[in-house]
Length: 364
Image (cartoon, rainbow, N blue to C red):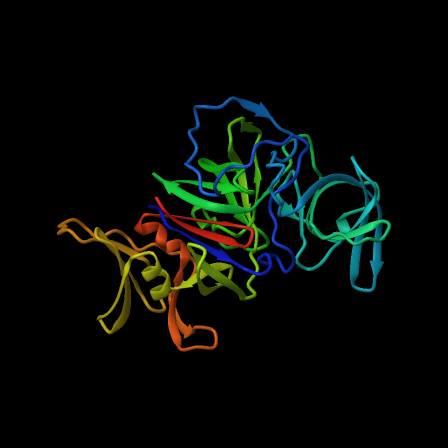
């Protein structure tokens, strides 16, 4: 019987210094999936439809954010604070409060812009927090503001909840399991406001991105191949989380540097795996294994390697980086333990996905 681990926090994980976000809302609704982990998309089973706004998400799901197309009616300034009073296409005027974490981007050119570039009368597409004041007009934190919308596709704001890489192709399940977004060989992948070189392999679950695409396949989940992807910064404040197994075992876990980490021994043994430790070339190596293979990783190095237990004369597989090196630290107020990437359990035959404040590790 499959076992599922759920990583749950008392509040949603914060990203970009505010609320967790990435999905958007549209009028049409589809049925909510029975489980957060779903099969990878089959690209030839659905019809394509033209889109001019972000994709539909389940009516019952809690969105990470709300997307609106609106006209800026006034740029408000109070000292260093800047807000945009806007009139959405649908609904009453609201005030979008900007911050240092707000993404400001030219939608057509996919380049950052300054708040000074935004004027009254401009048409924008904005993603804002689910939090709204009771004032009139209501005020809400702006997460992303897109200017110069142009005649092409409006960038969709996605929260990847599961990331798969097959034959070099990266596909991310996003927004409450409502859409698979894929990167092709022609997809342009860039970061926001840095010169760092990135590829589709740098897409991480829990780290939002913007994607531009012209069509969506009408399946469930929907499917889209992005022409361009911009990876956005994740929050780096440490978040305390709880790891729940079968509803009755609670293990503390956390988000560190935008990555979900779990205590290696407690998590592995809860899944029925074996944990070991050895020295190689003076380095401490943590191992997690099942009957078929062993996952090994040096303490302090973001290099996770999977080795089959059966004799193999071929070359060892190259180490995989998950964005966080294993490290030793106190188990909150208790003794020190080794923390490793939750995503690394994917190498041992588990599907790993995150949805809002819940991380799922499920045996395939």
